[in-house]
Image (cartoon, rainbow, N blue to C red; front, side, top):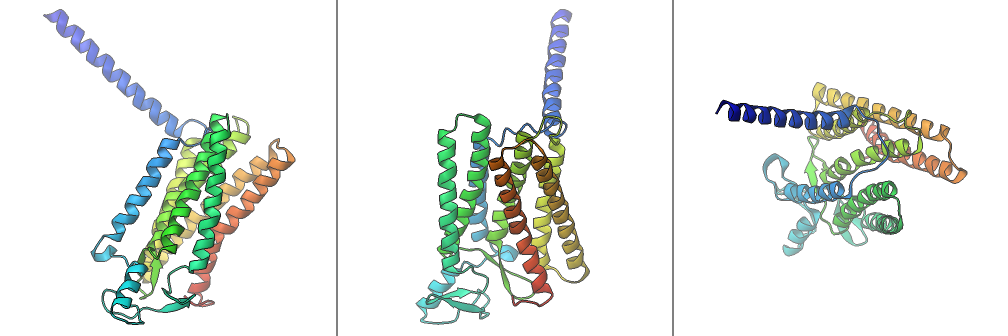
Length: 306
């Protein structure tokens, strides 16, 4: 009897040790290992896309403080009563503009611009799919899958905008802003930052590769930047200034880290063609990431209209 009890205790202790070892190795891989440039698994990207679609539709059906406006629904309601003004659920007349004989809300993206963006992202996604189907390298397939995920989410977002299914929230100033745009950024920009780290790890030597904890730290900073930036629309006074300062602090941290990564990539042994691609990627990323803060600051300084 004592022998069986001793064996059971020994087995339990061994199982706990193995479980602890697995958890320790998972934590070690998450934070203390270097990035190897293998990219993101396709299954994880598929789950992220489904999560984006679910969250988008959840906000569309929410009520209360998170109640959103869908432009297509408002246009249909106005047409039903033969009206020309678009009003919010509370009865407030919304600011609009004409876009090819379609009355659009001020916060909506122009239909032709959305359609053009939809076409561009669809082409990019098809190119990525072709690369995934024909490449023989697992690491390149994962990197291409990561790029394709970003373009597919952007393509789906602009498809919703073309259909008039944007999600608009009312700010504290009374104007509306696109919640769908923020959701798109929350589901794509962290993956884009992971891609930058993965490309750095793929090109540079193993000793130059960054640790995973730095990559995850930048991902967290990115989400904090987006959440605080969105909350700026719903706050005022000192709270608004604190949120804005936190958002810009995260922004400059992210940009500075990415510049350092690109500099190390350009200092490595690259062919002329690959070097040109990385330069183009760095310029495009810098322009895309700085355009929205520049427009926001210009609006705050009343240099441009809302």
